[in-house]
Image 1 (cartoon, rainbow, N blue to C red):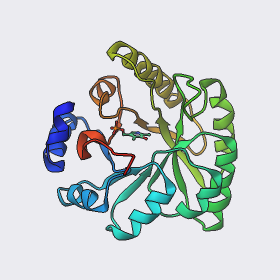
Image 2 (cartoon, rainbow, N blue to C red; image 1 turned 135 degrees about the horizontal axis):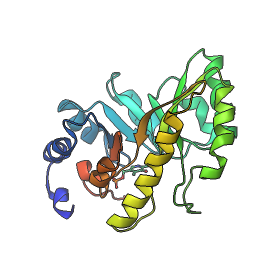
Image 3 (tube, rainbow, N blue to C red; image 1 turned 90 degrees about the vertical axis):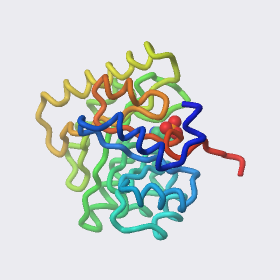
Image 4 (cartoon, helix red, strand yellow; image 1 turned 135 degrees about the vertical axis):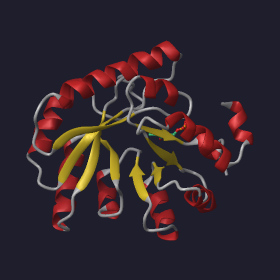
Length: 227
Ligand SMILES: *Cc1c(COP(=O)(O)O)cnc(C)c1O
């Protein structure tokens, strides 16, 4: 995707959306590290779903942007940050522990609001990544069923870096877990959203059953972390 760096945000969006159309796939434009002006550019051509991975950055940008944006929190969520996001985000992609679940339940129920979440699975079992291991899924699901103010809408994964074959392997594993859960009945849990696929692998992710892709650099160009 080297060439996309040279294209405008509008041109990149056109290209990505062409890949998604006719498939009812949600595009979340990942705006982390990017200025509010870039978000406005994408907003002005119709994008409403934006992803941020840091609560602090989200809190800075959100008040400067239109109210009808659906904010997706895609990064690891620390329990002590939950209080800042209550009622402000559309979907939390990174539910990854019972302790975080309990804090969401506590903070959202206090405000009589509902937290919509995805369970993040560390499908490659990488130490550097967050998300729960598949072995811990049933316990987390059991805890979610006891909640009153947290709903689980599906699953999310960031897969290990690798070639196409490796990507397909992990996407297939996620899809299979997703479909198995879909067949079962839970309280508070439905399998509507399978959030997987980023700039370099979203086309493969879609072929393997993703319903939501999170694309950053493929829309906004390369990120510069040393600014
Ligand atoms: C940064 C990020 C993305 C987007 O990555 P790109 O390679 O820029 O498309 C997607 N998901 C998560 C969780 C991220 O942190």
